[in-house]
Length: 208
Image (tube, rainbow, N blue to C red):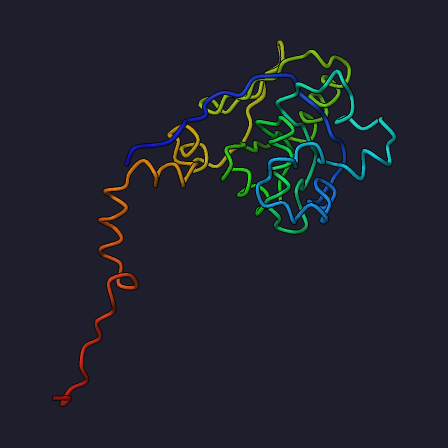
């Protein structure tokens, strides 16, 4: 099959959101689950926390508005399985997330929209978070081919499952684009599926 767009390197300023177990309701409040196109979700990422912080939340810092790499802590994206959470982050401008660990469904939803989530040790995350907080102009580079996250002279080996890494490098992460690019193979596969062509059951012995 022909692949869709490959993703090999994400480079840009970083933004740190500190805290363990940040769930999807904190990332995007439940009242926005009625959004079906996701187009306006970026403006509402972390909305309730931003209101509570009165302009002191990282997502309200004008110096960080062009950030591409989100740096988080443990069990990020826990809670409900809403796909709106990674959509909100991505539409705000996030193209990659680096953290200590991620909730499994959140991780999968990120892969489905082309946002890689790589893991680093807690001490390395602390270094990156402090770095981008002290100097918002610092550029982070996430290299999926080598599995490394770099910032200036710092370079860390990050973890990403091999199957997921391959899907980004090959472009197969975008399932709909792969299907749309290969209509002949889709039709050939459909022709072999019994729930589309009809099931045929063998007759019981003695049934004339």
